[in-house]
Length: 363
Ligand SMILES: NC(=O)C1=CN([C@@H]2O[C@H](COP(=O)(O)OP(=O)(O)OC[C@H]3O[C@@H](n4cnc5c(N)ncnc54)[C@H](O)[C@@H]3O)[C@@H](O)[C@H]2O)C=CC1
Ligand SMILES: O=C(O)C(=O)Cc1ccc(O)cc1
Image 1 (cartoon, rainbow, N blue to C red):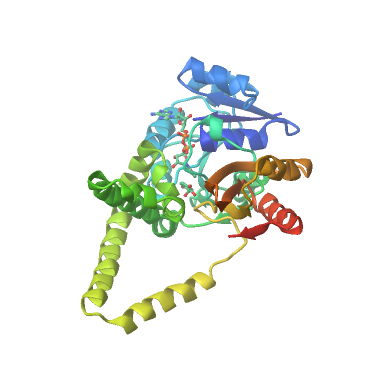
Image 2: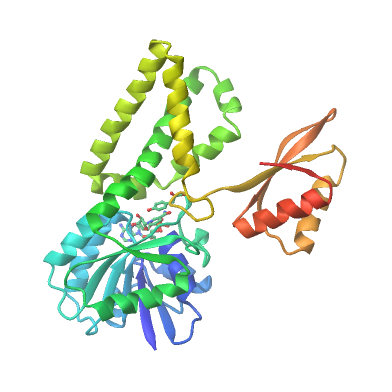
């Protein structure tokens, strides 16, 4: 039996637990300092066993996953280094930054155990075990940053275990990870928060901003709802990278202001053209760092029962809706429904089914 202990059974720790639980020869232990949280993990069937004892969970483990906020990773690793871990125990983490925890692991004497940094590059703006899902990492990249002292067979053992996540494992240098992920994930989160706060400021004087910001604005700023403490830790931990990226961003925006100031229409066109071209080259059908929204819109005639009939058509075909929203429904105008799905398969199938039934579907 292989024992996996998870510290921090939240969105990511809980999703990993669900990937491992119930698989042959795997036993999953969930740890929290809070007994109520432990009881919740067990009651929700996310782990096989729960405990408030860090020592009990750590010393029983063949694999340890640290799934706590980035600011807590180093203290946890220090604590583990004082314990009597099983020889050959593999410790990994899921933090969104990799350089500082990996270099901390190089400095700490871990005896007969090994540390391999990890980052499953999928998630959401939600947090807590309630949001966990065994499908979270499917088809996403999962970065591992083994240091020079990690033997090949130890790396392979972690890679093999992670096959249960159905993610694509990618070995990478820790600093390179932080540079790239800083640009494609951390910077967009900062921009989304700054943008929402800018508009929220205008809204204080005129609530029309909020009303008109429905729909697209809401979608592109979804990531601004991430957990504030998780993001505080990530940004402070990736400080040097973030300062450079924000400085480049300021230049980019100042360049835009300059084009508008000088009424340089050609310059504006060129910027949109270049951006469109680069976007076209982005891989389309792969789960990226920032989760795609699987939404589409359906025009619906305004008559009673229409929503029920759409949901039962999908339900009868076992297509799971994750959300349904009435965008517009007035007596004289046909309404629009926004339907959301958890994955691409349901999204594609639902659009096909409704189009075949004669509904007008648009994206
Ligand atoms: N949210 C996301 O989409 C992603 C997050 N990550 C990383 O995963 C880690 C966990 O994040 P989430 O699962 O999103 O957060 P979460 O808030 O859902 O879960 C965090 C867990 O850590 C525990 N925890 C919180 N503060 C703690 C503390 N001071 N000491 C000990 N335990 C504490 C919580 O009880 C909870 O079980 C973070 O390091 C984050 O950077 C990685 C990939 C995606
Ligand atoms: O909400 C989203 O789409 C995200 O961007 C989630 C996310 C948050 C942190 C990560 O390190 C990786 C992914």
